[in-house]
Image 1 (cartoon, rainbow, N blue to C red):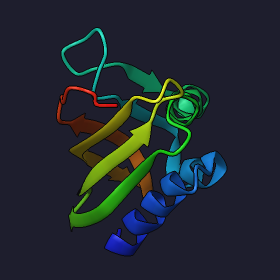
Image 2: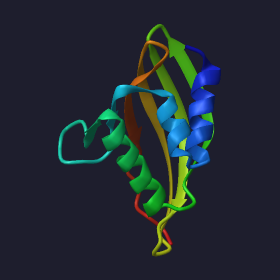
Image 3: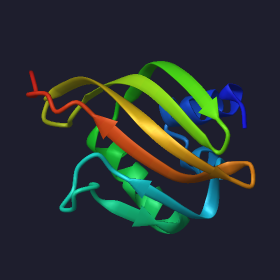
Image 4: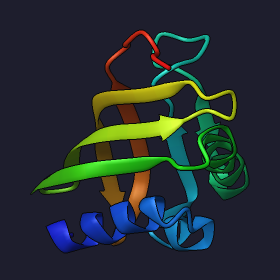
Length: 123
């Protein structure tokens, strides 16, 4: 696994390219969102659920971008820092820093666990 792989994954997110995003992930991938009903956020399992979760992000924030990513790899784990920016359809603007923790398996992302700051939204 390389930092270039994680940059390619980040580029796919910024292009809102769901197929490219999922090509980086295992068939049984897990996405743990930063918000949700459980202590570890909302969990999505498998490419179908993960694709819908990411699609919902792009629908809610049509201009979503993860800016200035920095990537780190250590064995079968990885880490990306970023600044998320996006505007909801109602005009609410969001800008927060966050990170993803990754677990790799067979050259792909098996788990993407996201964290981000909880900031009051601005208009």
